[in-house]
Image 1 (cartoon, helix red, strand yellow):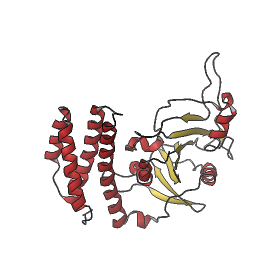
Image 2 (cartoon, rainbow, N blue to C red):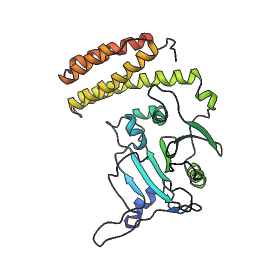
Image 3 (spheres, one colour):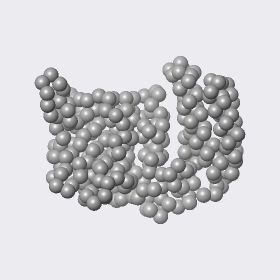
Image 4 (tube, rainbow, N blue to C red):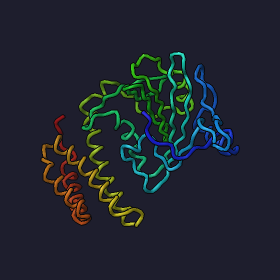
Length: 291
């Protein structure tokens, strides 16, 4: 359940006061009930300690794998583990501070993409903890997520048999530090046709928006053509899959054409198809779909 590789370790015991003050805005740097804060451990002379709180610069955290856009800004993720044992789990916490860029408007939408099937149906449940709404997903352990303003908080732990008690003390402590700003939905509302429809259309919107953003960065000469074409075709393919499923418009020919454009680095052709899809979406977005 580990979402990304460690790119930069910063250890609390070796850090200046300013770092300690900064990281303590996001992480709880003490034991929480029976859960012991993982602290840096020096194992070999001349080698930096391992373990303890970490800071990951230029990291969107758990929304990175669902194509959260970071081309025009930097996000920072703070990470720490609390050690359990004796039948209780060892949860890992990720707190990502997003910068307030335009892409943050999709944070609520992106938060549960991994908890849905490919076509947007939710496969998780909602939990209310001390008046806070939290998303919970269980597969080989549990993953708890919520928004707190522009921060994304994730608490996850491994438990292949799902027999260990949830680390409620840790969850409650982080909710007290970073209260959830998720909307208070019921499971009935989450699984309603209206909610699913809105989420599906938002994903189609987001995919076209991502294409525009990539091409804008190309225009500003901040990215390479190859990457822009790859990312744009990826998002357009997802848009086409959704359009085929929910609007009954065949996707195969368009996807084959996009693949040929990508192979030939035909940016003009890719941009023309993007305009076509945006024009189609403007006409059809408000139409009813069949789930």
